[in-house]
Structure formats: C-alpha cells, structure tokens
Image (cartoon, rainbow, N blue to C red; front, side):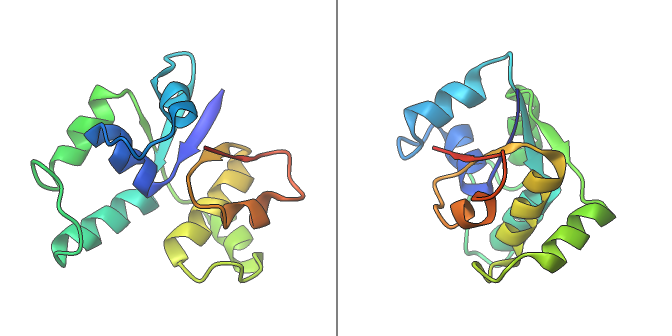
Length: 131
C-alpha cells in the first residue's frame, strides 16, 4: 500500500517519539508499504527550523538522512494538487495541511496523521486518515 504521512508524523517517527501511535508506527515500518513525505512537509520543516519554531537533532540537513534511512519517497507538488486545494472547503486554514489533503486525494493515498481535521476532507472519499 501507498501512504502519505504528514509533517508531525514524519518528525515523530524519525525521532522515535512516543507520541506516534502504534498503528502509525507499524504502517510506516512495514517495508511492504510505500511511504511518502510531501515536499510541502519538507518546506514546512525548513521554514520552522529557519525561524526557530522547530528544532531537529542534527539540524535541517538531518531530514534527508531520515528520509533515506527509512526508505521514504518525496512526493512533489503538481498542478492537479493545486486544483484540488483550490476547491477544498475551508475546514482548515493551514496551507500546508490543505495541500497535504489535496495531495492525498489526487494520489489516492490514505494519510497517516493524528490531526482529525483531515477526516472532514476525506469523508466522501475512499481514502482515510489513519492513526
């Protein structure tokens, strides 16, 4: 299966944080699953580390090592993602999360996230938020 993980899920998994659910941890660790991290999440991490709102052990450069070590793929943004984002209802004002929701919809990937607001975007879809 293919899964998109959101920003906090990526950070928590990479850091071994106990906040991540056992289901999320199992799905991500299962080598039969393809795990994607959006370039949007990497952009969010880059911005937040640059302004001092987020600290990562090893600095931002550690992110690429975490992706490689955990065999995660980077999901780029394409025009179809922006079209869906443009049409999404305003359940959430966070532009990063809105783009993640639209990417999950376009790519038909369930999203691994603790954030329940995503459920509103997926209520009429076959994809789900998993936690």
